[in-house]
Image (cartoon, helix red, strand yellow):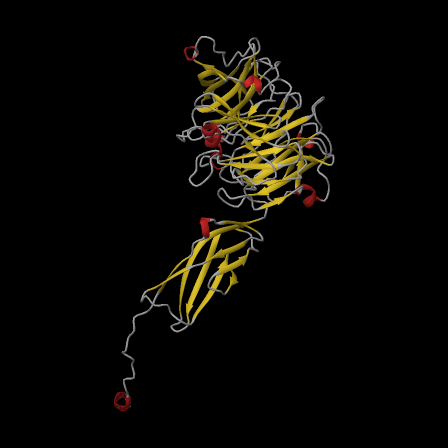
Length: 548
């Protein structure tokens, strides 16, 4: 039986071998592989819902000749969005840093090739842009001007966005608006929110920076669910751990949050911030050098009650325990001063008109430079005061500081006369843009710090009520006017291919007339915001602007 089986298998194998014909195709062809490059125009990778996303991919073929019969499929965040070679897609999916992918199918061979890049699509308002607080028709108004990329003009203006989103007016008597970040490494909402202080309506309230829906109000955040006696909010500033509620009389109330990843935890105590050991001398917070430098461990303020500069601490120790909420004096080596210099810890006989934070361009963040405009009340002369302050480390009882100089600002008495409206803004990038802008009613002046000279710069059609140049290395100056106009002037800091306003004013001695007519220095001009109270550039996220 076994012999028969083996014989049968042998016969079968012979028959199969004898009948087999080699039909293999040995006419091999080299594959015309495709290399796909997907790059966004102008390297812009951030978009908002409704934006037109355009991309023209580059296809390189291994044999130098383009294949025919190709199929295309674009996808974003795993969702198919187009079947055309060149992409024109109206963004309809919110996702952060997700893959925009092109799949190219060679239908002759069945092989698919891929190319991709990462992009983000957010809410139309969860982007960088300018926030405008104004008063229109008796009501507080919050508007948003969306910025797309680089030094291009704003892409979209949404006026009175609070009313549009929330369906009601925000309140009355607008006073101030400040951005609010969590830690630079993330949080419950990476998009910065804003605190608005106003005299009517719900008083101070917080608004989401992505939806512009109202989130909360200040009143229930106090221990007793009500404001301390006599407190009328003028500003709310959230730092990493510390929050400041500042009254119109300058009184500061503080809270320490449970964690810097959360926006609103903890309660404001009913005891004002003081600068003395006995807790009797209240700190005046009406003049704070506000800046997004969390590495400083707090904010610098000029306290007119004690006549000195103080550092309000905001620090999380390595053990996780907060060391925040103290008003620390500055400690300066007496040898730093020259004859006639006023002391930072005793400003008797002087009035501080403005103090602003600059920027340490060696990226060490210590010490942090500050500049102040001060007036000798006896002589009436004005001076530019320069000094720097070290970073708070959580254990200091006094902040090490260095006095740099006190130089007269000639002719400034013509601008600051006690009756005119004055606004100030300081370029943080002093290495490349050593400028301070000062306004007098509808006139704008450029103070060139390198040669201590004041230049008339631009004339507007209405009184200047707010200025800000915290954008892209101070290359754009945003001006808000009493008549409801918002205007952006370009060319503040040197940039190739741009008209440079600063150079034009300093070298040519000309005054720019800013009207309805087109002007080469005007990047943006929009009307009808209402009387502008404050305008500032709101970064989408993160506290620390170490790369801007």
